[in-house]
Image (cartoon, rainbow, N blue to C red):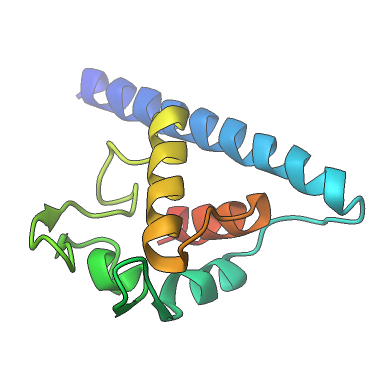
Amino acid sequence: MKILLISALIATFSFSAVVDDYLDSLKQEVLKENPSFKGFDAKRGEQIFTSKHIGKKGKEISCTSCHGVDLSKSNENFFTGKVIEPLSPKANKKRFTDIAEIEKWMKRNFNDVYVREGTALEKGDVTTYIINQ
C-alpha cells in the first residue's frame, strides 16, 4: 500500500513539475509581448479547444473532433480513425509528463486545426483547460 501511495505521489509531482515548467516558459513568452499578463485562463482554453475552423485538410474541425468533448475518455482521430487515449492527465497518467512531447503535439494539433502554430498565450490557455479536465 505504501509503495502504491509513493508511486502515485511521484507521478503527481512529476506531472506537476513538468506542467509548471512548461506553463512558466509560456508565461515568460507572453510577458515579453504583454507585461500586464495576469495568467492563463481555462475558459479561454476551452473556447480555443472547442471552436471549429477549416483545418489544414480543408474540413471543418476543432480539437474535439479528435479528442472528443470528454477528455477523460478515449476518442478516434477524425482523419485516421486511430484511437487516441484520454487527453486528461487525470485519466491518463502518461499525459503532460514530457515538455518535448507537449510542444510537439501542441504544434502539430494547432497546425491541423488552425493551420498555424499556436501563440504562447493560446498554448498556455489550452494546457490550463486540459489539465483541469
